[in-house]
Image (cartoon, rainbow, N blue to C red; front, side, top):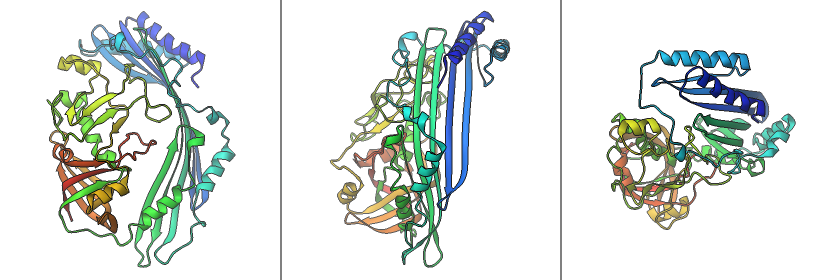
Length: 445
């Protein structure tokens, strides 16, 4: 997708920066194309075609640091852009802690961009007629009969595909590339109960390869999820066992990973400050960075600095094994650098259960959470409050829908009470988080 002349322009930008007096620099060149075919009640409603190309420039000039970007990539415009960027950097305050990463830490195995098998050549052959046909064939309007319990009153679907290509180079000799395609279909439906109440449901599927996208059941799953909410109401507050569906379980993992990030730690705004190497959670909690899984979106060989990623534990048996520290933060905190973020978080199974149904049977009774509605987390303390929707279950079986409830607590305490994690994480999601179960969770009706 990125052509040779564009690569030469990226190299030219580095050469110009050096000629203008920059001691070091990094250039990131990216291109993307996406097509979206939206449907409304089973008919094509809107078609979008988007293209983007841009170059970002990171400069280190006389102890000063600046970042700049442009989408004007002809040679004359590029020369003017780089010259002005260098001059502007010279008027900024000095920051001697800024630097490129050590070349020994940088990726050397991403020359083609498709080492992880995330690019599908079939993308180039997909026509507008095929995209339209896939969007229409996946729609369920007119194909699902009304029932005495509900009728389908609206359906909004969206088929999309995209192509992404990015190259990162720096004056220390770095060259790494990442190419990826994506094919997705998602739908949101609304059903109406006999009393006029309306309920919505959503489902989606995606794959980096066209032959991996399965759309045939997406609409039916969305309808089933909407219909399952009919008659939902709050349940009396109290402490219950909570099972969290894999589709939304990452909501409980993301704040923990964010709290392990360098900027939060350095600014004293992290509830995980001072925990490296310590037992913080129960021994059931193991999260690894599974960043090199071939064929799964989200896998990466390098971060935005070009530092090589590597699979390994983030939290192991409850012990914090890694902070996410880029070059700048490592020098500010005077600790060793790692990578800047958890690339592909994977929470490992625990408790001898495979999926949601097995976990419900194991737990017996409690509340199954299938959605979060707003809420917040205090990043400094770990205290949280989230609105939820889901189902009451008894004897391992779902018995009634619930809504209008809150869960409250503290993340460090919550994760000490993990009693089960399934093996049912969805590969198409950014984080591989399975169905989870926790004891003694505070629910407020």
